Image (cartoon, rainbow, N blue to C red; front, top):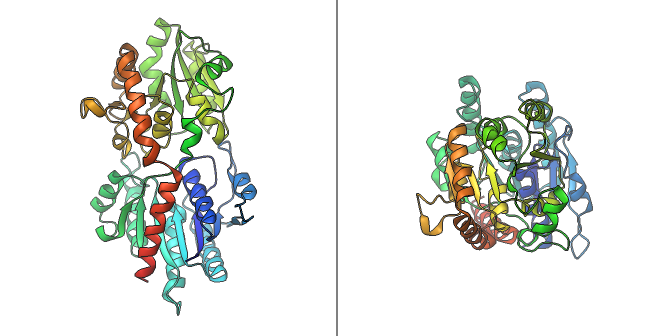
Amino acid sequence: MNLRILHISTRLIQGGSQENTILSCEGQAELGHEVHLAYGPIFGPEGTMLDRVHSFRTREDQSIGAHEVPHMVREIAPIKDAKCYLELKRLIHDLEPDIVHTHSSKAGILGRAAAWSVYKNSKNKRPAVIHTIHGPPFHKYLNSTKNTLYIASEQFAAKRCHAIVSVADAMIEQFLGAKIGDESQYVTVRSGMEVEKFLQPEPGEDRASMRARLGFTDDDFVIGTVARLAEHKGHDDILDGLANDLRANPNWKLLWIGNGWWADRLLGRVKELGLENQVVSTGLVAQDKVASMMRAMDVLLHPSYREGLPRTVPQALLCSVPVAATTTDGTPEVCIDPGTDPKNATGVLFPVANPTALRDAVCWLHDHPKEREAMGQRGRVMCASMFSAQTMVNGLEKVYADALSRC
């Protein structure tokens, strides 16, 4: 049965949840569904994925309907939020979708409220309302007032949807622990990606070519990070933990892929530490070029304070690059530590906000090249099927069918 599906996302910047959403839209359109995507205004240094939405066409020349919601903003803004709610409600009423699928916190709360209002007043009991958790909006780094507000908002929104998809098992536990929703609503569907781009390099984008292009030699030990240069991504911890080792080992190099509001400050710290010759910062890189950059790495370092399940971890493993990462949220479901499961290890975990443990993890990987190679190969095999976009789309088809059966 072909469906009319409306996805709602807060911002279409270059990011993991946005890529997940767009790949869902593309895969569903290829299956013959009529797919629409609503989003808020896009601005700032974090890039945009809107061009990909506009340029997409299926084999039958079907496009994705794109709808900007003028008052959809990330921050808490009561007047804009009220206007956004009405805009979403009007869009849902006009489109008459079978499915409304929301993504991210703000779009998830306002989108579910608007969709549920339409659902409750619909004679044919449509749309079914689905939400995907890409990362928890509440966390210990927020003040208690905001955390209380976010948890209450998620509790409110969970009562206004038929199913809640999570990209990691860990977040289901966190949300249920915060008394958000009912266990029967939750299902894990891993965040899909275009695995072929990571498994098979394009001509001129193999490891040796990319290292040469970026100015690395065969003897360099390249520690790569793919993340926005922003709060809670851990770049300061990298500098705090590795500055002395970088000075002592001129062949140790940092490769920072990404841009963000903290770029000037972080690169200023690099200069103050005298490390400008050992840090390569690429700025914003097109999504389809991330894989080639990753192949230049010896280790992916992901010191983020909070994530859902960071896409960069399986992406690096698909490129046979082992991982050093924090234990936050769903990361341990992919970065398997040798202390937990030595036969299936794919990387080394360390606690959040611990530069010393970060350093120990990186040093261990540097000092164990054979184990490093084995980890990358294991991760490549594990992630090839687990994180394919088609596996995700197939999983969402089952979620939609189940939700519609309960409408």
